[in-house]
Length: 316
Image (cartoon, rainbow, N blue to C red; front, side, top):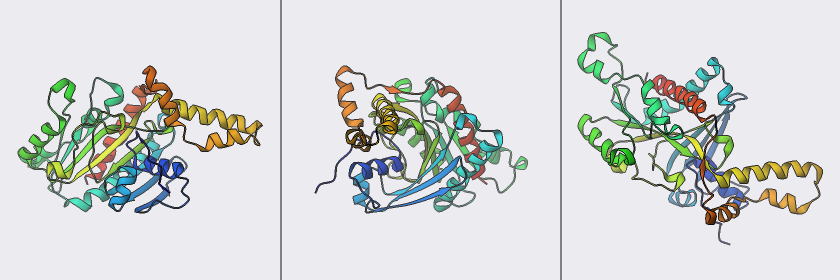
């Protein structure tokens, strides 16, 4: 029996794994994938997905490597103390990945992908504004900084539509000139769940393919293309209309099931992933938009703050 292939339209490895298992009605873990889940508290959960071989890579469409998702509930209602805790959780996971690739004082370049003029795509440039830059101080004013400080530099290269230059080409030029030992790249992602919008952080040690989740794939930013390790950090800020309709249908069915628990049709419908059917209905009318919440401005600012602090904390 052939396993069902999926048009994932999500950048999240954990989400792709769950979608594949649901579509193929798998009880056990996918062959070649290891997972670990840690509940930090009632608002924060960390899930680690390790893609171990080429078979698993092909199944979920993600390169071999480590994918860590940090789910943060009700991000827009977090207190300052809860934001700090979220940043610390991110810093811990990021620091471990950094430590696997470079030594304590080796140079790191942080790159914020995206368009600062488009709010759902502005995560990267926003984070760059808050990252603590040290490379120039170490080079020109070493007497004013601790001798154990890691050299950190950062750029926000913009997007092809406003620069006329592929993002990879800009990054490659900077990497060749300043020769960092590791790259941390930040980008907005796409998801297949409304709940994950601006409430999930994914970190991976495999690099990134910008625009992959929304069908606008650009040249990949990876160790293979740059010659240095790349850690990718992203947050979903958009979903397709089909995702919204599918999630809304699930919610509607759950409501109906409370009054019609014996209705086999509704029960079976709830078990199916209706994304593809809904998408097929929307595409001919060009209604399969990419959408984002009305409060995206506040959500992106909150997540930018958490991510920037997490990066800064991880550089110690």
